[in-house]
Image (tube, rainbow, N blue to C red; front, side, top):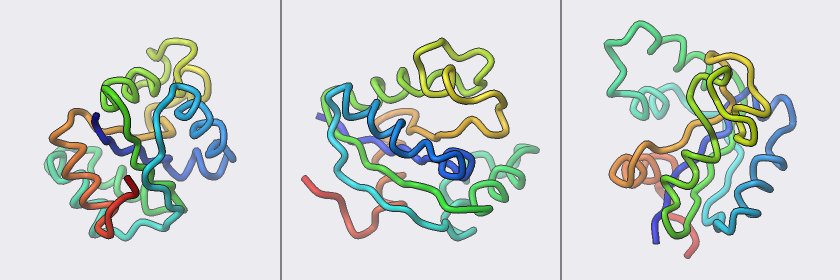
Length: 137
């Protein structure tokens, strides 16, 4: 059993895709163990993307994630990290397979709708950052 993090970014929230994305997660048989609609503060976003601090896109990503409401989800189930990564699709939506969230609903890497944890270790850190109060078992 694993738990992973999904962030529905401002573009996904603005386009009213929260229900569709969570529907797909639940249809897959995964369990939502944490869910909140928030306006992310800059400090949290910068900590979340700290490994990319020296990359040219860091500032733009942080600006985007703090530009509007986001939905943070903790998702639990067998192989949750890999299952979610496959469901979300390639980071660049034009390379994402049809049937994935990005392949079906996104057009640009700048607004690729979602973030999902890369591996179980990253998931544990990210869930601690976005759900310091804990999640529901």
